[in-house]
Length: 153
Image (cartoon, rainbow, N blue to C red):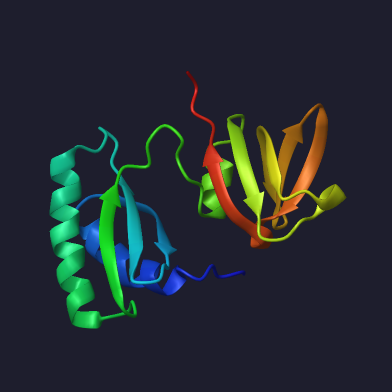
């Protein structure tokens, strides 16, 4: 199984978030010169409010201060996944079959393209299946850099 770079952080943070009653949707680490951003997405059935983000931020911040898994200076952000929910795991791609998605690959695949948008058909054998412009496209899960639901307006 392919392990995304944030897997170590996920394994460290997930038990704390889940013990608090939330789902850890995923983690983004955005390195920058100077100050980086560590963004944690949480969810709960009734929806996330600011107070939830504050509670999780306090607990995770303490954990990160003790474990120190992120080099240098960074800002910790705790957020709901929002309407354009990011998809991080194979289970996310199974859960949102039938929804419209935007996917960006790490490297160009088909006809030199990195970006795809279409209806999510599912995941099978490590391939994410998307219906784009009337054609089924198979995208390797291991090559996905970003994936999000397209918010319905």
